[in-house]
Length: 87
Image (cartoon, rainbow, N blue to C red; front, side, top):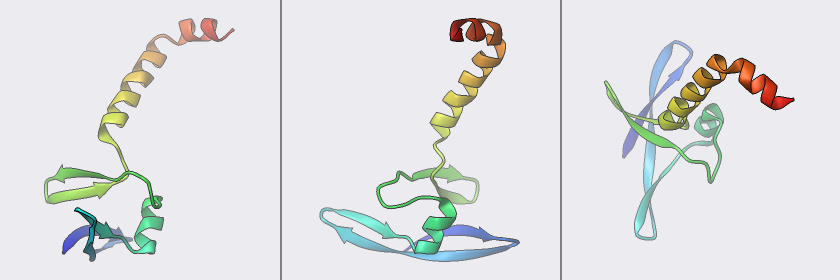
């Protein structure tokens, strides 16, 4: 079994995920309520990242967030140039 921490309001609850054989691979079955809280559906990508207390499953892509941060810095710094290019 694979377990993840899910925060409901102020309480921490553990949700057990059942691992299922899918061909030569293994998949985790997520309850509908968890998928809704994570705003994901079948076919979406989830990321498994290291956390201080273990592993974290999230739809948040840290690499993409880093790229977006860099893009925002450029847009802030070069606002006038981008405004002229948009004309």
